[in-house]
Image (cartoon, rainbow, N blue to C red; front, side):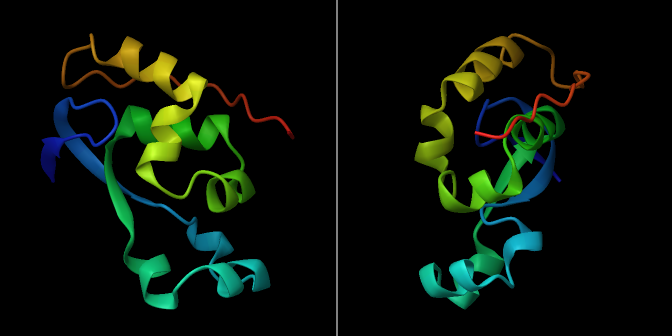
Length: 104
């Protein structure tokens, strides 16, 4: 699917990002705090670069517990810095993303 990325706004090929990572759907904390249908259907349409960067910056647990909506993702300083950078790139640009995941 081609369209605007919900993080950087570039018009390019999009991927689906589950706001609550699929690998976290079955855990008890998730079942207690989120609606079952919403967990499976709440998605963001992101360009490949933004999607890979989110998974490189944050653990699945962080994405589930702290960053499960668009405003909280946009508020993260690392995401803001990346979005400012990638917005200046052409639509077909796919950055090399290095894993920067650390325990917080």
